[in-house]
Length: 181
Image (tube, rainbow, N blue to C red; front, side):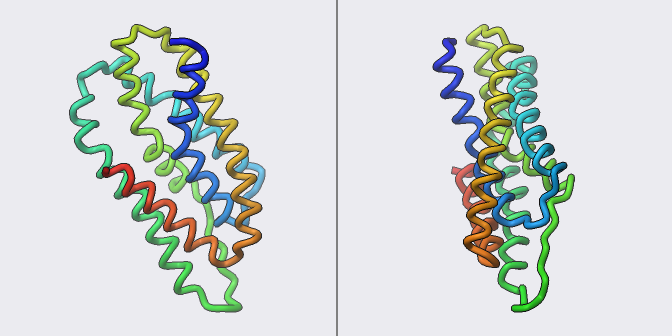
């Protein structure tokens, strides 16, 4: 696998994490420095570890993962997104609504957005790639793109105001539905 192919693959794998991170930047107004560090770290690590697991598991779990991954992604992102939409619509004007990005939510988001990377890891087995450099590049590119996405999401959230939570929830649900297709 050439460097250009790896770059495009890494960007492609990172896109769900980028969309979720942008949503996080839009919705969560109380982000602290630890969040700005944790999001790229979590998403990057999971995007790197999942293909590594897929590489070593080979085709052992590929069929099961292929069959159920869309459902798992839809359930996780659907619940998080649905909760955001509900809270966005039930928020009363003048009420101070500050949704919090918890470690649990971030962990679930990281898992949901990286499941497809496991299947890519299975393909890496057949391609006989040098897995450590490949997953390192995937993780680093994901972390960089997630960092940029958080900043863009933050700016969009400032513009959208209270509607950002509804839009963010809808985005998460759409990503979950896309995973089912």
